[in-house]
Length: 74
Image (cartoon, helix red, strand yellow):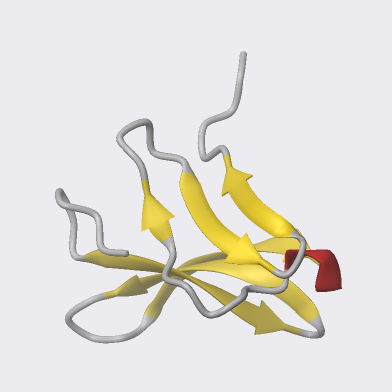
């Protein structure tokens, strides 16, 4: 899912046997960041990664829907 106000696309990936949230530059395809989500419980189940109006990331997994809150609480 691409953010409307940037050239960044968000997707779920994997690194070192851990699932990750990846941020890629749309124009170059280069990684801008990644965040380790966790192990097999966070396996992505084919559907696209969605970004809602509150900036939360949503995707489906074999165990149900995953929602990642992208903002930290103070």
